[in-house]
Every structure is written in structure tokens, then in C-alpha cells.
Length: 343
Image 1 (cartoon, rainbow, N blue to C red):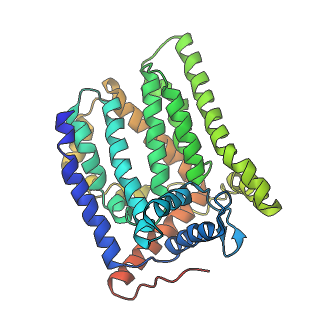
Image 2 (image 1 turned 180 degrees about the vertical axis):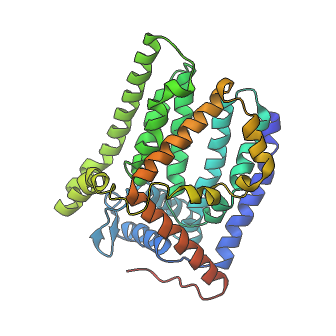
């Protein structure tokens, strides 16, 4: 425990440098940053924290949890742009801590792994490049890590593990919608691939606990969705209860890109580590058959990669967002970035 704690001052210092650099070198950039700022500001002005609004109309594309965090920051520190822009970096710091906690669950007693995990994440170019953006994705990452921690604790028989997973699922749905289930359910359903547990009694309890956690997550999400659907009107009700859930999934298998579309992006997502020879040597030496933590991670990675490759709607959004953010960041660095609100 002590060896893990020693790395946090350095992590926090690097995190603070990234945050301050973003605050002093670029404005809010369209489309996502200015849009989310507009939604949070309009909810704040209206005093309506149930239904998000944009340009006077209910905004159904995102649930409200991220905007609630912005409002909490404004309530505590006043309505300032730096507060708005500090929420995602604060979530990123929580992601590093949650990753450390998950590492301790996957490899108990391995203090070195727990100490290296946050540095590996912070050292990933893709992660570090986006932690200063006003965006919701990191909130989904945090809730996914918490849900995974609950799953691995449940595999070890810890009490309250499925409760943690259920709460994380509910908050994940309130962060970015039912896509949360796509990140969590595969690894829980495929538990026989990564855990050596045996016995019919264990598996009855396992899938009952998983079902209960999903139901708890649904209750948490519906506690907001049903009153919001009533308050937002017919169009908003249709959008959040159908358009952003079942209808979106039905229309997401048009295959705008080939199923291998995500594979080239892995080099970006895992850079620079995927480019280092010693990393591949370590993978070859790893004993998958004897390492439950490694089997868990491989099951998680491959199952979600396959499902995300099949849901073509996510391919198009991800690609456009990455290209747009890099282009706007380059423009801001050159001095021609625009910070106006998008309409």
C-alpha cells in the first residue's frame, strides 16, 4: 500500500500541469465543448435540473449526470469557466484512482502493478490528449471501472460487490445512456472464460447477482428518466425512452464501416505502449492460463471490441470526434481557434 501511495504526488503534479496548460492555452472549442457548456448554462439559468435544454428545446442526446456535476461545481465555487473545464480532468483523476483499485482486485498483493497502472494510463497519448476537454466519455470510463471492480469482487465472494456494480451501471446510464451495458455485461456474462469457479450453486448465484445489479441500475436510471419524460413533453419522452435506446440499437447495424474498422485505431488508443518491443515481449511471456486478471482483461477487451465493431453507429461518431478534436486543438494552438457557442 505504501509503495502505491508514493506515486500519487507525481501523478497529481502531471495532471495539474495538463489542466493548467489547457486552461491557459485554448478556449472552449466547438462542437462538443461549446454544446455541453450551453446545455449546462441553460439548465442553470432555467433552474431546471431535470430536463437538459439547448437553445430552448429539450436536449435528448445525453443524460444529465455530467451537467449535474458542472452545476455542483458552480454551486460550490461560483459560475466560472474554469469550473466547467475542470470537471472532466477531475473525473480523469478519479479514473486513475479507480484503475489502481481495479488493479489491486485483479492482482492482489502485486503492489508494482497497482503503482504502474495509473502511470500507464496517464502516459497513453490518447487519454492524456483528451482529459482536458469538456466531454462526457471519461465519466462513462469511471463508472465502467467501478462496475468492473464490483464484478471481480463478486467473483471472489465479497459482500456488496453486486451492489457496487448495480450503482455503477445506473450512474453509467445517467452518464451516457444504455451503452454502459455494452461495456459491462459481456465480461459478466462470459465469466466462465476468466474465472475458475465451479459448481452449479456458484453460477446460479453469479447470474442472479448480475441480473439484480442490472435491475438496480435500471431503477437508478428510471428514477430520473420517468419524471424527465413526463416533464419534457412527448418528443422528449419518445427520444429518451425509445430513440436513444432500442431504436438507436436497431439502426446501428447498417455497417457504415467494415467490421475491422476499430483495429487500426488500437494503435492510437494504446500508443505509445503498443509500439514498444518490451511490451510485446511481456505479453508473450504472460501466462494467460494461470493469471485470472489477464484472462479477465482479455475477455473484457475482445468482447467489447467485437460488439463495438458490430455497432456501426459508434464507429462513425468515434472517428469524427477524434479527427475533429485534433483539428480544433491544432487550430487553437496556432491562434485561430474559435470559442463561440454552437447553435
